[in-house]
Image (cartoon, rainbow, N blue to C red; front, side):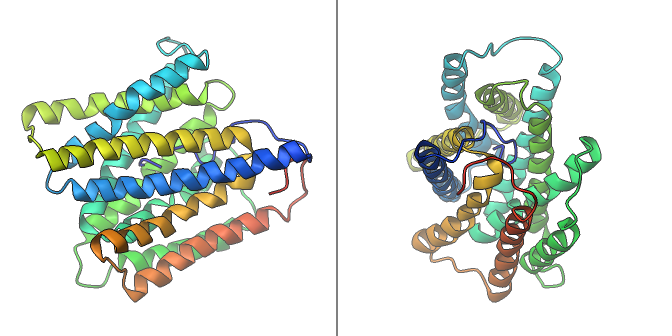
Length: 311
């Protein structure tokens, strides 16, 4: 994110209140949860890759996804290589996503996996602000208190006054801002570009961007590290495909809250693989961030209902 892809784009049409619609919603939630598990495993693979440079980790994560995204994009009928008014925005989305992912991987190396994930999951809150500023979307009256809760939680995770290196924590925070910028660009492309074409450009830009530093200082990984790097790419691809399919099956407003399962999976996996347990402040901070997301979800659904599937 950032690796985590367009949570807030709303791909796919609303589904009516019918048994078929309910089934689609159930499958959509399953896809979102599967993507959260997959992205949690990406963090594990990045950590297992050890001292391989961050840019090399980003490269392998992206190069594995690139042909798969191209195949799905072509299958959907999208013309991948066209030069029109949308191309610059597709490239810009790729740049923002690449910066976010690089910062997130750096944060994983210096923080507990759960802490890095919590900070990265602040991106939806930044999306609200950026969409209001650049896309002129109307802010909900609940946004200020919800943002306040989320940022108190982030402050507890970052611990700015404790004797910890602020670099990885700030990288995690700025990865969320980069992800939010990427999602805002994606939102501006809604209805104008196919989802898998957007994914393809993200993978392509991030792959190309990592080649120069690798040419200057490439590190040959051990076979164990290579397996971890390829695994990161495989799980990232699974997560991205599941996420995109989930948002095509049901409205984003109904299922996006389930992406916070990523935080839970990250904590469980980090404990299983590395016996890593966040400290008390991080646990409270993570709970506040997730609580803010749940609160925002519930408050938004108090607003006048629209015909959509009930999840």
